[in-house]
Each structure stands twice: as structure tokens, then as C-alpha cells.
Image 1 (cartoon, rainbow, N blue to C red):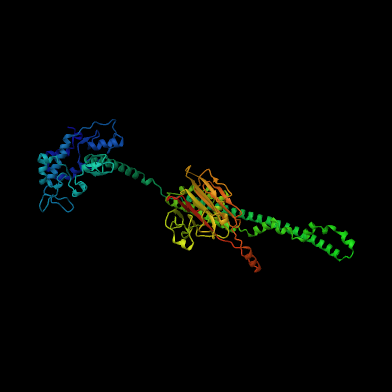
Image 2: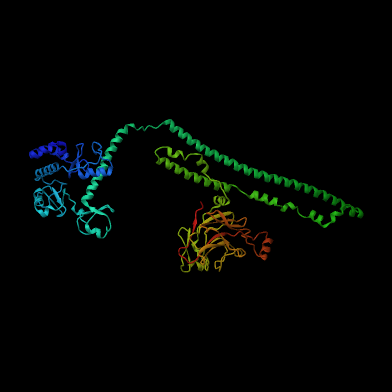
Length: 623
């Protein structure tokens, strides 16, 4: 008899002499476990190399791994073996299990072990649990299930205590199937409701498949552990100090280059300002020289006239300088100097009033914020990385170049230097509008008249609302996302705007706005009107998503930009922001040596048309 291919010799001896089982039961139990599923053999088969496995375990291993080899010794076979169940080995395993059970039949159940449900106190240790009877039996009480024909069909498993977990709470049926889609055990009734059309297989089949998978995973883990054990001592975790110092020096060099670049930009800016100042100073000196020459010429002429006035000779007076009596020359002599109102004076005043500090402060603040954000990201990446290689590509000259992007167009300069924070004033909103809690969103609400209308603060007839902040000098810029509104109005108005206005505010009424109107006939957003009735509608090729509003109070300009396309939509020039008093009041105040003219505040204005509850305007941060 071939001992390897049939069954182990020690099992054969135990089969012939059952009394030997108690002496070496531990050894036999270890030898009767499949090395793949780690459970007792089921339909044991033998490979040509002499190792035994469950038939389902070894075939499943070959199918999942794609290799025809022994899981233990890794011996490969030329072709897939036609495995036959070793019936004598199977009978020996069953006989040994019966001998072991008969030896343990009188063992009492210990704490933590499953007791027999039929035994009275004291209870014996259960040997099997019946999934049909939902009860656990010791060996004596299990005898009917081994003898009675109808009870032999019941499914017996190793004893378990949590039988309630094996019953479907919804249908009060035993779990018989496994749903592959939901990866859970189900009963037969579940396939008719919650798991209809799901792929389900018997629990026994799912059990075997899962065991095969776990066995394969266990083998892979063992191989991985062996591989790691072989290479564990080869890993060098020492850090090269010189290399680390070199990297730190390179990083310091990059930051030094950044500082040098900033210093160079500072020097360029100072040089431009100084050149501008020198040009203005030279122009002023030339002007002073010309003025001194004219003053000298005026004094010479005045001296000649004084001499002529002192003479009593009529003929000499009339013949000496007759040109002095002509109207044009006399007017030139007696009128104020022409340079008092020349463009040079205006330019010099502008230069004297102009301050570059504000522009530099905003630009540097923007640059500092961007560099800070970039550095935080680099530090975070270095912390998460395994070494310094991840940050090596970041700290390059490109980082220095991109730390701050100089303005590429006029809109970018406006965004960097003149952006302000604007919020909506809900007390000025028309009753049809709704202002968000943070004051950044405006929606169409269609509500009842607001109580603020009683005090004249809100717009009564038109769906308008003002911003909280007013501006009476300088420049300011803000952006509004308009893509979610079919019809809208944006711009600025004077503080004294009529809150009961019947139509759109015009420059004559103290409003400078742009209006977008939805065309219901063509169902496209195509018309943008600058609210000045002398202008035709502005047709744009592409609908604006975000509109920027820029106001230069001193120059009297209001401009509207398409932010995404970075184009100018429309610009008001020569706006009369200043208010002139009536003539009578002006005379009275001039007599008192005071001026009645004032600089009223300009407030951002927002409006939504088209009674659609989805319409919305959003004040967005300027990027």
C-alpha cells in the first residue's frame, strides 16, 4: 500500500487500535486539519508531492492563483491534476472524529462553552448544533440525528451559542443563502422583497468560497512575511547628514533669491518714482525760468510806460510806442499770466497729490498672503512625504517667479489695488427681495411690504437694495456673480436717490447703472443697457457670469467689467458726483467766505427683475 497517497500510517494504526487515540489525540487533531482552510478534511485528496488538502480548497487555490503548484512546498506541476477523493483516508478521518467524540461525551460544559439544550443540570458539552431544530446537542442526545432517517437530513454544524443571529428578524426564517451584492446572509423570503434580483448562493457554497479566499490570502501573507523577514536587515535607515545639510543650503539659497528679487523690484519701483519726480521737477524749473523771463519783460515794459507817463511832450508820447495802446497787447499786459491755468499746473498738482503708498501696501499684502499660502502648502507636503524629494520640485526658480504675479492688465491692477468688502443693507431692500444673513446674497422673495418703507429707507416701487458701505472719495471696486439671474441691475447711486423711483435711476437722478434684460422672445440673455437714454443697448457676444464695478470718485468715472473675459463692458465718464447748491444759497455762503458744495456718498445698488424665485445675485470675494 502506498502510505503517502492513501492515508498516514499513524491514522491507520489508530483505526486498527482505537485505544491509542486518547494517548495522542492532540497530534492526530493537528494532522487532520487542511493547511488551506485550517479545518477538518472534507473530501480529502492528495497531490503528487504527497500533501493532502480538501478537494474544494486545492482546486479553488489553483483557480484563484492561476498557478498549478502545491501551496506548501511550492512544487509546480506540468498540468492540472485529475484529483480523486481518497475514500479510505476520508473514512479514517470520520472514524477518528467519532472516536474523539465518544471520548468527550461525558465532558461537562465549562464557562464559555456551548451546553446541551436537552440536558438537565449539570449540562454536558454540546457536540453539534442543528440549524433546523435550532438547538445544540451533546453526544447522547445527538444520537437520534444519526439514526433517524428524517433527522439525518438536518444540517449539523459545530456548536454555536448565538442561534438568534442565524435567524432573519424580518421573516423569522433561518439564513440559508448569501447575497453577493450586499455581502450578507439572507433567508429564502428575502429574495422576494429586499434582495429581489440579487445574486444569491447557498451558505455552504459561500462558506467554501470564502474559506478558499482566506486560505489564499493566508498563503500570500506568509509569503510576504518571509520576504520581509529576508529583506528586513537590508534596509538602511541612517540619514546622510551631508546630504541633509546640502538640501537645507539649497532651500536657503532659494529664499535668498526670493529676497533678492523683492529687493530688485523695490529698487525698480523707487527708480520709477524718482524718475517721475525728476521729470516733474525739471518741468517745474523750466516753468519757473519762463515765468521769471516774463516777469522781467513785464517790469521792463512797466518802466517804459512809467517814463512815458511822466513826459509832457504830446508828440513824443504818441509816437514812442503806439503798439502799447492796441487792445490785444494791452490785454496781454494786464491779464493774469497764462501759466496760472496751464496744463503744467494741473499735472504738478496731480503729482503732489498722488501717493503710491496705498498701491504698494495692497500689492505687498496680496503678495505676502499668496507666499504664505504657498509656504503652508509646501510645509504640509514635506510633513506628509517620506523625504525631501517631494518638495524638491517645488522649491525652484518657478516658485520665486510665481510667488507674486504682477498685474497683466488694467482690470488686474484695479482688483489688486482697489478691492473693497461690500455687504447688502436689508433695511433698504424692496419687499420683493430677500437678503441673506451674511449680506452677500440677494434673492427674489415676493413678500409683503417691508416695515422699513414707513420710514422711507427701503425702495418702494422697484426691486432695488443698497449696500451698507458708502464712499465719498478715492476708488473702490467689487464683484457680483450674476449668472444665476435672468434680469439684474448693478451700479452706484447717490445717498439722496429717490426711494420711490418709478424707473431705473439715471445720471440725472444720481444713478450710474448697467442693466441686463432677458429677451423672452428669443429666450437668450443678449441685451445689456447702460442706463443712459442717449446710448443704444450693448449687445455682448457672451453672457457675463461675474461683473466687476469700479468707481473713481475724483475722476468721475464708473466702469463695468466682464471678469471672466477681462473686458470692459461700459464706462461712464465725467460723472457729476459733486452737488452744486442753488444760486441764492451760493451767494449767501460766498459772502460768508464758505463753500456749500459737498461730496455726497455713493452707495452700491443691486436689483433683480423677472419674478423667478431662482434668481440670485452673489457678492463674491475679489481674487
